[in-house]
Length: 455
Ligand SMILES: Cc1cc2nc3c(=O)[nH]c(=O)nc-3n(C[C@H](O)[C@H](O)[C@H](O)COP(=O)(O)OP(=O)(O)OC[C@H]3O[C@@H](n4cnc5c(N)ncnc54)[C@H](O)[C@@H]3O)c2cc1C
Image (cartoon, rainbow, N blue to C red; front, top):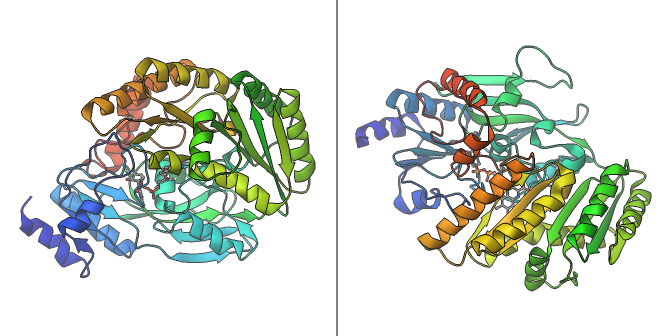
């Protein structure tokens, strides 16, 4: 592309919105998918308003320039990695909370607002925003919506899509689409809100969202249980699922993850445990519920299980879980995989992951949202070499194949991005792919929005 074409965009937008400084552009090239090699973008565009996003996309459509929408770049499947000759459209400066409507339990936020900032803002009104990906202190609402992010509280409160009432989206031609609204019920027309959620920047650029918030639970209890064998842990999970009690959090760490957390910060977790469960219950019956779940874990053979209603102690246990992904990544090049299986098959999946680790010769530490059957095998690569990369890809292929074989899916919450396109085609049938391609063509006939990502 000629510099003259880019200077048209510079002229259309306020000073400083289009950045071509090489050092700055470099900082926006990659996301956190270590197996995806990012391309070289022409520029980074950092709008502060929906109108600026709209002008940028109209220009991109006119000039046929690929656009890679970007939040905080914490994605793990390469969806926000730059492409050659693209512009990276960063929503980070659209970070205003437009409104908190206490009566209707909703909040209207711009796409660049960080997840934890929504929680902090609504907490002052006795409310909470349920979706809490492990990256919640960094990742943006736009990125969470575009990936339909999960997190720890999904087991009770659902994934991101269950907390969205409406969206403001800029289409590929620059038009602004408003979907949904402020009501609890709404069946007027096709559900375009849900179509956009999880579309990974391929159908439109989300600029704002109306999110559903809930009254903060009055009480929370936390429980932890450790098991000497995977079999005991699986029996405990089956008993919890059958108990009729819905925990608000139900997480698991395998032995390698427990040791990584302990190496980082001593918490006196059992380093020999084959499986550690950490969970929470909330609401009026939280303490009795947590005690009942501890009892089920002991009956299943836990060598240690306890519950606490002390918020500080509970926070410490949850902190151990939240640290997991970050501390494993700190230890060296890591690929955080993401698959989901029917939750009664978690034990089988963990056994298969151990087999894959031995077969490929890569250490794998697995952490997961046990309540959703969503596991993150974390592949520890020896170094950044091409050989290590190939080992990582081989292990990832086998993990996805194992999840499919167990009636699961190739991604539970991180999305397809660039990394999992082949896996997607193994997982979905041709009709499903055809329908998705038809929707993409209808909304983005020039194919400028995050090309080569998703389906
Ligand atoms: C340690 C760690 C823990 C994590 N834990 C979880 C977890 O528990 N659950 C979970 O689901 N994920 C988790 N993730 C993955 C990641 O944080 C999520 O996918 C998150 O939603 C990405 O948000 P982001 O702002 O960083 O988006 P980015 O990485 O910048 O973008 C992600 C995708 O969304 C698109 N996109 C971004 N903004 C917009 C927009 N405004 N409009 C349209 N498209 C857009 C991008 O093009 C890309 O395809 C974790 C990541 C890390 C590093």
